[in-house]
Amino acid sequence: MTGASRSPDGFDPIAFLEEAVRRASNEEVEPMRAYLRETLEARGVAARVDEAGNVLASRGAADPEGGHVVLNTHVDTVSPHVPFERDGDVIRGRGACDAKGPLAALLAAFLAVDPGAGRLTLAVTPDEELLSTGAHALVSDPDSPVRDADGVIVGEPTGLDVCAAAKGRFEGTITLTGANAHAAAPASGTNAVAALGDVLAALKTFDDRPDAPPAHSDLGAATLTPTVVEGGTATNQVPADCRLTIDRRSVPPETADGFRASLREHLREAVPGDVDVAFSFAERPTPFLEAWETDADDPLARTLAAASSGEIRPFAAATEASYFAAHAPTVVFGPGVLADEEGAVAHAPREYVRTGDVERAAAALAESLSALVGRE
Image 1 (cartoon, rainbow, N blue to C red):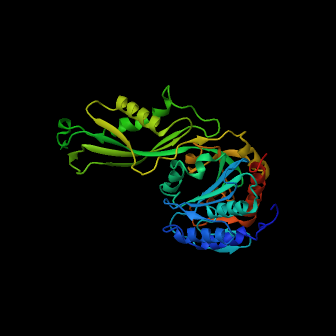
Image 2: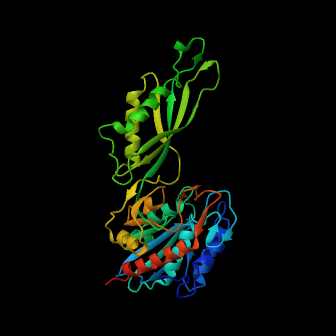
Image 3: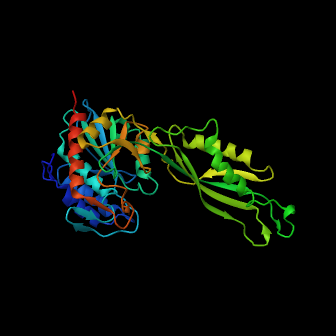
């Protein structure tokens, strides 16, 4: 497939991408999901949608002896929809690089490679941009094809680099509780807003703790950022309540549970005893995307990097690779970039991908899968 835009069965990833970008999938993914199923079934590949909305298709041996690789990406996009445009080798529009360009490349390789005694599984999720219910269902079901994979390739815009690690992201709220009083007699109450100063100071020192995770060799240091503050109900009243939302970008080996326990202890030591302090994660039906990493020397990473001539590096954003990496070596790879020298690309009105990069990604994936699946 190297150097060609069409797979042996006539699948053209650029034609697929042009139609995919035209289909809005920011509020409703079914038109895009149906198009993906139609594309697969038109080429003789059975595709099904599971209860979580994932599109699943497989090729190769039912009981693979030559390896099993899962190809994953997502069909949903962020709002608002940005219409399709084609300007030479540039395709613009919402989803062009995040992640319909990567999907086109993955699909081309999936259809082109003969897995022989191995197996290829395409697993495309419906809500990566929101709560990752599809991906969580894939890793939670003991009969899911992801659970016995030897490797997972997650399609995202990486500029054809192979990303083998990423920070996690946790979000939660610190709640301070004091006692109301008249502002003319502030000492008769307990000012929760005033205690916010101690909390902000504690957040700055949180990663200086002796037991704090050290900076990661590739990902750098974890970050802890205050983002939203609310407190008080009247301008002449000592406020009894204050809430601060925080954003945590974690690095291995920190887990969500470990972070929560450490932050609670750190805050309790910093806040005056007459103020109650609590921390809770934002409510969501799926686990947070935790930090993850795959050994850069793993055959999956090395083979794909050699085929794409890309670097092995961390990924800058949180992805569903976090879920898959707990079960198998996982990398993130695809055409397009999150941002370029002019600014944001993914999730931005100027989102684009170059057709040559989609074709090169498809060729690198096909070459890698041929080497990884069906091995003796």
